[in-house]
Image 1: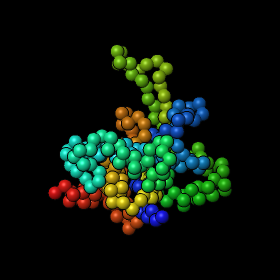
Image 2: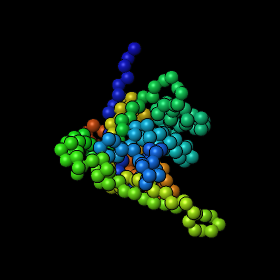
Image 3: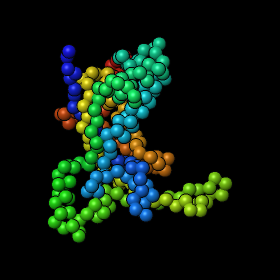
Image 4: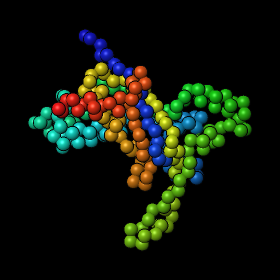
Length: 236
């Protein structure tokens, strides 16, 4: 039995707006909905979350190509329908409840130079515990936003609807390693999924979570910029 050859890439996401990657919990009595962050107060994007976002993006990409009557190798034959698209996306990203592992592995996405920053902040928190702590570090990466629900008929804020959420500041860049089976169709779909991904997180209808996503190879080449040119050769 031959072992599967895996290729290594980096997913890079730059936040173009403040972003809410919800933890599903609040924080104390002041924050109704909080983000995910580590024990030092550094936010991160969990692997499962970004995998789900890119899987949804992959489905959108496949449907766009099919609606445009464009064939891709293996991906879309003229006679294949939506079920074939779902099967292909599931074969790359996996399907919940399946006993087969997906040919793709995601790590958490963290800020640039995360390991070095974490070690320094940990050291400072130990040496200067009255000055440096999780609560003092968090505001460097995040900010609080307050929102109210607006009544459809009145057009004014509903009573007792004020909510406070913590969001990650725009401009931050997150990186995470990814391993994927060395198959051109898998890699093409992943690259197109990154190119198509424009929003992550919740409250996107409130202007949060605008992003730019890139797939970068081991030679630090951004292959999302080249993917459409490569695939155009298949449609000539």
